[in-house]
Length: 97
Image 1: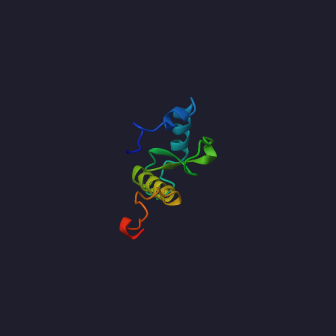
Image 2: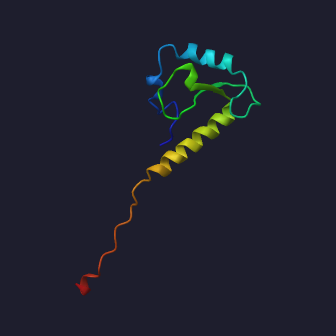
C-alpha cells in the first residue's frame, strides 16, 4: 500500500494552525534549505516522523528535495525493522525420521 496524503493519518495530527505555520516557514525560507536553489513549496519536518510543529523544527523545501528526503527516510525505516521472511525452515524428509 502506498503511503501518501490519501492513505496517511498524518493530516489528522497536524495542529489547527498548520496553514499559518506553513506560510511562516515558506516566508522565512523562500529557498529550499536542502539544495539552496529552488523555491520552497513544502514545510518539511527537519527530524523525520515527528509531530514537532515548532517553527524551529520546520524548514522550507522544494518538491524534488522533499520527495528525495522522504524516500531516504522511508528506506532507512524499512532497513531498521525488516519484515520477517516468508520462508519456512527446512524439514527433514519423512522417510529419514
